[in-house]
Length: 95
Image (cartoon, rainbow, N blue to C red; front, side):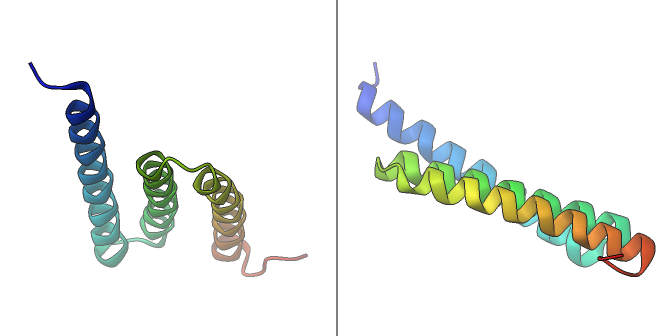
């Protein structure tokens, strides 16, 4: 039987590897995307993956400041994704 603290560390390591792999695959899609919409979606996916990594780092460190940073990063990521999509669709951001 695995000790609970070692199981916790193992699960945290697996989560870090999974989210880092998702980040790498999204980066590949960002570079190789055949269309602009694929690149926008890959960029948004990378923001979500970065938020996941920040939250996992907060869990690993045991501090709450990372969760607040992840919330701020999520708000900025959403606004930047919407602004970039509007720029691609209309050619301007502010009407």
